[in-house]
Length: 256
Image 1: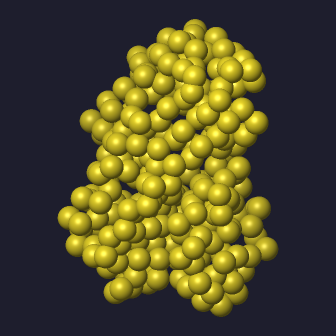
Image 2: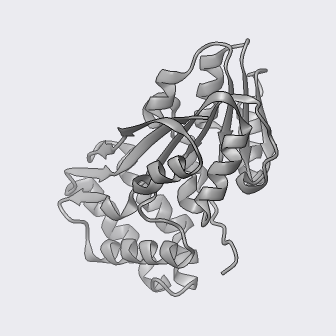
């Protein structure tokens, strides 16, 4: 199967922040650092990185979706230490340039994550650090269980991902991937996201139903006519029933 691409929803990406959604990286950043943010999207997290490294640092965000980069370039033009470039992780050509290379929720969408980690390693200076954050989608959970129409959609989401050779347990496999690439001093930090009824993070799946749902249906993993009902029932569940959503993530760091 040829490499498939999905298109991220800018509403999901733009609500994220460095401090809330990439907490381990936030603790590692220092003024003057050079940082590459792979799969930067709309630049919401990347801008936080740029603010942390300050005017003496340099931050580059790359993404293959030029529509997202257009949003990033407009929203963060006021940060001179920050630049954005169109590019694919598997074809980046940086060599020994950055103190930190990071990918947040990106490797889950790549069918050859080992090759991607190899390219990120090459971009690091000797002794530089890779900081990767990603999901274990198979272990995400809701309390109480969401409506059946949404459960069916979520299973279709997992099946669609698996058919495209995107790892539904990406976080679980990150340590072995980094070890195989020759990284040392590995650390694994649980980075789970918890959200309840009042928190906007619980609504991420409404956006997924809208933006990715039709693609999943066209691929035969869900019935398109059921998408509206799934969104309506999930919306009512968020408004009245949910106690907690737990998204399972790990951050893994390693030194070149």
